[in-house]
Length: 213
Image 1: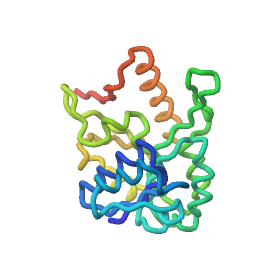
Image 2: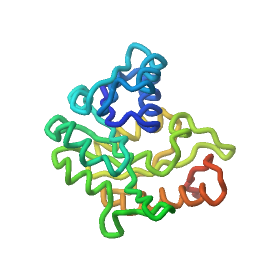
Image 3: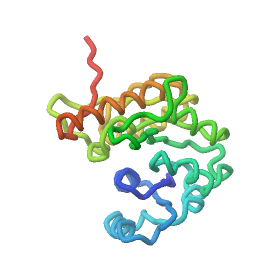
């Protein structure tokens, strides 16, 4: 599959490398695709990896990943061109974090969410929320003593969620689908719990797991 990633930060590069490792072709897009960290990523990722503008990454992908900071997400979508993402699955990894007071807080909610906002910005795309409530160091093949952690996802279209679930399972995750994109109202506060625990303990090697009897 050809996958376009909007965003060349840590989240975008880690996911890009993981997707390449599964055999997918990946193009990561940004405003400055020639920056040194992108060149280093391209060298490490190999021939199935490329870089370009937001618009080029959006046009390239049969599926897209939104891996931007929230403050730049709307502009990245505008630069990519919503029409280039029409009909495509879009994995939304974003959290609407506001650092203006020092301690991060959510700038969207509780009766709305970043996931729902992205779906409104991309009305013809099939948005699936995933990867937002764990650190990027554990995106690919997460290793924890008690076994695979749980990745909660949500989105409005079942077929899109099945494909995203397949990618997550290939990465080593147990997947729980919590329903429509409005489930982002729960997953984004869950990310806040992950973040605040990290700040309080100065550790970032934790994840959530749903336990059953």
